Image 1 (cartoon, rainbow, N blue to C red):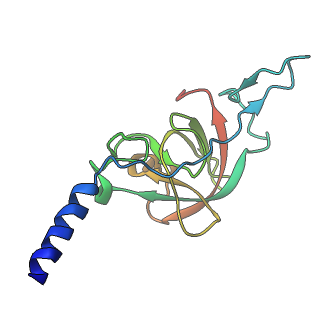
Image 2 (image 1 turned 30 degrees about the vertical axis):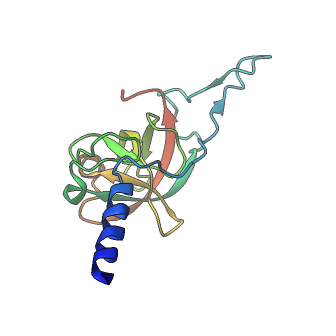
Length: 155
C-alpha cells in the first residue's frame, strides 16, 4: 500500500514537471540612451560602429559552453546550437546583439543573447557558444577577460 502511494505521488510530480515550465523573471537591462539627440528621450541600442576606445557597457570574464547542451532548450525557448553565434547573459533581453572583445588581442565577435547565465562567479559576464568561443580564441584557455558592447546587429 505504501509503495502504491509513493508511485502515485511520483506519477503526479512527473506530470507536473514540464520542459516548458515558466522560468523565473529576469528584468531586462536598460537600453543605452542616445544623448547626441538634443531634447530627445529616445532610447536606442548603441551603434554597431562603436569606436574601440569607447567605454564598454560591461567588462568581466567570458566562458563558453558546447556540445553537452546541444539541442536543449535555452531560456528563450529556442534550441541551443553550439555552431550558432549565440551567448548567455544574466540580464540583457533575448535577441540583443553584443560585441564581445578581448582587449589583450583585439579580437572581437558578435553574438545574439538567447539564454541566461553564466551562473556562479559574479566576474563571469557572458557564456559564449562554441562557435563564438572559437572565433574569439577562448577554447584553449576556457575563460578570458572581455569587454561587452551592445550593438545593432551581427555586422
